[in-house]
Length: 358
Image 1 (tube, helix red, strand yellow):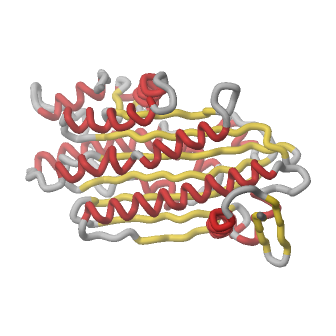
Image 2 (spheres, rainbow, N blue to C red; image 1 turned 45 degrees about the vertical axis):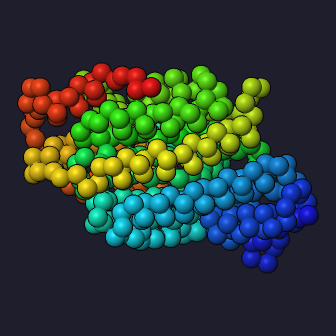
Image 3 (cartoon, helix red, strand yellow; image 1 turned 180 degrees about the vertical axis):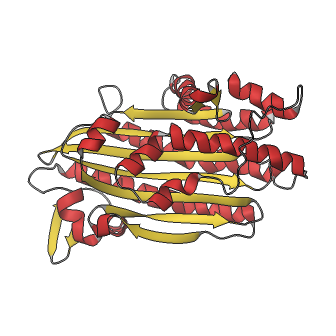
């Protein structure tokens, strides 16, 4: 059984074990994602220097991200009931650095603006990257999915989800690799049942792999999505977040693949029931006003602190896709404070003092 990767008139024919149909489908997905002219030399490096399982792994990861994007977009369109995603295929560095697929949904029954992006990109490690991102090596490869959804109704929370895989190379050999990702919830009004459901979904996923994961990754999420310039105000009620998880003696490459896959697949179960419950709730202009105040905090975090945003901009990423996460309307009111004992203050207090939900 062979894995055939073709670039122009050249071919890379690799002998593999497994289903012929599955390998062919995976190869087709990878060819689409990574752009035909550069697959063999730049992504899969070279037949003599790379082990076949490493090449096959990258194909499988790209294929997973492709299918995850499709599945999530179908679920979001169904719950919205009106709007459809607009698809924007793009290439990095005129086809010499990989590419991706940005899908945007706007002006729906539920979603005022949102996007579900996937990308598989690569390039040379620049001096700027070494300085700003603290990485070494000659070349890099990254593939992942990132989504942000901003509902119109203030009682439906905003949500963020991201799962990615990163490799560094020296002399065409992998010298470092890691997984990262997470899913977090940003409500504008606090419904404790929603927060509990969201956290319980991801706690259950984590427990299937390691019972220590949820408390560790929940804390990491609380400590990461923080506007430090706002008295350590959290962006929302959190979720899970992990980064730089490398294969080792206890957890190998397949383990982290399976864990990331399970977390990505759990997004629909964690979020869609909340949307269904809240999307038809009546709201006032005052509720919308508060939503836009809190959206301003979302913008502050993404532009000042978020490592993913900084990475994309520092690696000459596609600006429209990177800034897709920003909400359509926001408010920046001078020294705005919610009324004492109000529902708005209740939400703010939770952002200032995170709590355990499950």
